Amino acid sequence: MVSEFDLIARYFDRPARSAVLGVGDDAALIRPAAGMELAVSADMLVAGRHFLADADPAQLGHKALAVNLSDLAAMGATPRWALLSLALPAADEAWLAGFSQGFHALAERFDVDLVGGDTTRGPLNLSVTILGEVPAGRALRRDGARVGDDVWVSGELGGAALGLRHLLGEVALNEAEAAACLARLHVPEPRVALGFALGGVASSAIDVSDGLVADLGHILERSRVGAEIELAAVPADAALAARLDAAALNCLLAGGDDYELCFTAAPDRRGAIQAAGATTGVPVSRIGRIVAVPGLSIRRPDGSLLDMEVAGYDHFAG
Amino acid sequence: MVSEFDLIARYFDRPARSAVLGVGDDAALIRPAAGMELAVSADMLVAGRHFLADADPAQLGHKALAVNLSDLAAMGATPRWALLSLALPAADEAWLAGFSQGFHALAERFDVDLVGGDTTRGPLNLSVTILGEVPAGRALRRDGARVGDDVWVSGELGGAALGLRHLLGEVALNEAEAAACLARLHVPEPRVALGFALGGVASSAIDVSDGLVADLGHILERSRVGAEIELAAVPADAALAARLDAAALNCLLAGGDDYELCFTAAPDRRGAIQAAGATTGVPVSRIGRIVAVPGLSIRRPDGSLLDMEVAGYDHFAG
Image 1 (cartoon, rainbow over the protein chains, first blue to last red):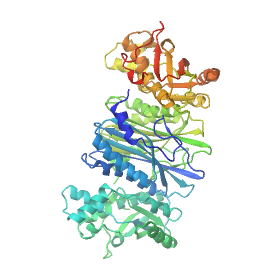
Image 2 (cartoon, rainbow over the protein chains, first blue to last red):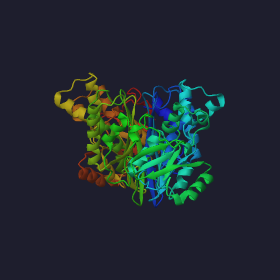
Image 3 (cartoon, helix red, strand yellow):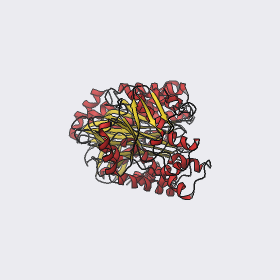
Image 4 (cartoon, rainbow over the protein chains, first blue to last red):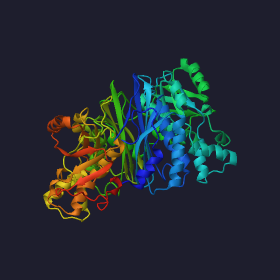
């Protein structure tokens, strides 16, 4: 029997240009290029937790794929194929049309083929698996940071978190600020080209989805090192730079959803990293260095250290 | 910040024996063998739709993986890697312990590495992506059935659907029957070895997840052919064979969740198929043949044709 959810699946039934066999069989068939490793990642977005139930469907389609592309960017991998599993409370055509448009538009921009997935009735849930290719041995892992490396971050941080606080009525942004911050929150731009350009240059990388302190913390844990960060060097979103209170600091250091890259590299790679940023049109900022002492310390412009415990970041403090 | 859901994820953090890099980075890294195509599939199971909210967690862990392994079996692919994304209403340790035990036990039996996924709070949702390998050109697709091919099915059909009707109080099974049918429903055995053995022998294959009529119908549609089936040749579950009413017929022909394989092959491959069944310990039954006239007809032992429209199977009738 063909259900309304089988019909819905047709919104996602596009010819797969780069797969041996796309949607419509028990599995898709893909053929990774010789000498390549396959980078595979999955992210699940749930209504009420990762987005509001009344979120714009086209933006949601964009974001569901973007957060997965960002994971591959952080590996230095080139995204190739995606699978999308959707649970929907009802067969809402308008929603589906918007969602699939947002998803496909981003997929096409990055040459990603949607090769499989599932569609079913249930509480709204967006589950995406992404597959990409990276030359063997060239992936940017979390465990490669070395003492003496610089710590870098791409773009500006804190805008998405500030946009969320604006939505929640906790801060008042002017119209231009709100537009910029909500775009950061709802339509993140995965740093795929930069991540690829950093392959063979950076020593480790992660995407900033949970906030700089938490995500840099993952690099430090996996690499068994520490880091010293200069607060003044951390690139703040423009709307954030106009505010210098505790909430702004929290957005800057612990705000998630920016999907910038945080990465490390030996000091002799500074030129190569600046070139990677210039080539891909993404600003890169050197914000500190890797040290042997475990934990993360952040220095204010006056030389004093941020109290990580008071700031609520104690888990990653030494 | 490490949340309870990050902690939960540790239930699934096992060393990946066959991956370059497993759980714990932005993506896993895997290296498919040379000359292999990668078969990729995803299935999403939702509480209240695919299983009861109070289902045994170990059986659920088994089933969430088994239905995905079955998709690869139907491609003739060898499963290698899985990703598991879980939305859970609460951090229930006992449930997690049971679920992960059931999942890992089946994964180990089939040498599948869990290499990634996601864990978040939300309405119960189990989303699995499976990756496997198949020699290039040897995959069992749905579009390969040819006029004159035999139609085959593995094992027995209808037991899972009968078990569900027993659970719903619609039929009364004796204790032995109930145990057997509920095992078919809750702990399906994916026909991975049989599917692999059918590679290069069968002309098409699908797994019977939505019922024989619907799933064979997918082969017929994709292959642009029809089929004539002998009802008496369709292998019925033992508990079903003892009942010969309309409900039993519905379980046999339209009952889902059996996860047997339905496949086609040229008549000169009968010996090879019997050998594949014998080698892998799975009975195989020849139930009909592929014809040029589109649609599916099912012949009763008395020679009359089952009225597909009355039976509710009209979508696939010519």
